[in-house]
Amino acid sequence: MTPEKSSLHTRNLHRNPYDFDQLISCVPELKHYVFENAYGTTTINFSIPKAVKLLNKALLQHCYNIKNWDIPDSNLCPPIPGRADYVHYIADLLEDRQKQIPVGSSVHGLDIGVGANLVYPLLAYKSYGWKMLGSDINQESLENAQKILDHNADLEPFIQLKKQSDSHFIFKNIIKSNDKFTFSMCNPPFHDSEDSAMKGNIRKTKNINKSKVQKPLLNFGGQQSELWCEGGELAFISKMIEESTLFSSQVLWFTCLVSKKDNLYKLTTLLKKAKAIDFKTIDMAQGQKVSRMLAWSFIPQQDRKSWFL
Image (cartoon, rainbow, N blue to C red; front, side, top):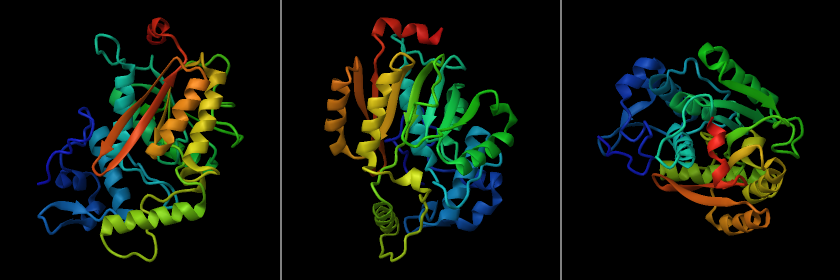
């Protein structure tokens, strides 16, 4: 039995070891990939793409009642516990002075780069009842996300999808003049080139297997728009900050994951120049990996309560 994953958020449903008997009852095919390792722990090989996808499918069905979740092999396969953490830390950000988290469809979130997996909107709605809009530049990803919604009719009123028609923009074309969002969220492309993304996947697979790997197994693989963009993470988030000033009165909290700690100084400098009223960095630790949520707002403290009415 593995210990509690205490680095995860206290409200994260995945802090305890996976109950593989229950997960296999949801997705029987998963049993072919479950084994007991040298430490006596029941687990899967996380370098096998099919195993990770089936684990995700089982977790989403067992913990969140999401039926028939699936993604193409070419798309990003997200680790569910880490994705859930981001949602829970956003909930902390929205807490009022009485430490009450706003729930229900009065909270309207925007997921930039929703991907084929639709994971953030699914977790946000199932955890807190929030209404979500997911945007993406990739039509095939949006079509797969829509398939997931089609299999879960109860989600349709609360989760919508929208195509970003111009890859030069992030919020423009998505946020209309009369829209108001309680928050935006984004897991940005990390790498600055396809070659960099491929090398990163090789390193990740080596770390998982603790062995030499000549050919990367893309267990976290993905489309180009999911993995890399010109200038990498720093350029993408810098653009996001710049563009957020145009929608400063329409989004209460802008948020984004930041993988590289060295980027924080430049990004916070940009936020100061953009005259953000409030910004903060929140560490999110998942096992050996440490990520960060950068959040910023242009809305004065005294005006924030009205966003939840």
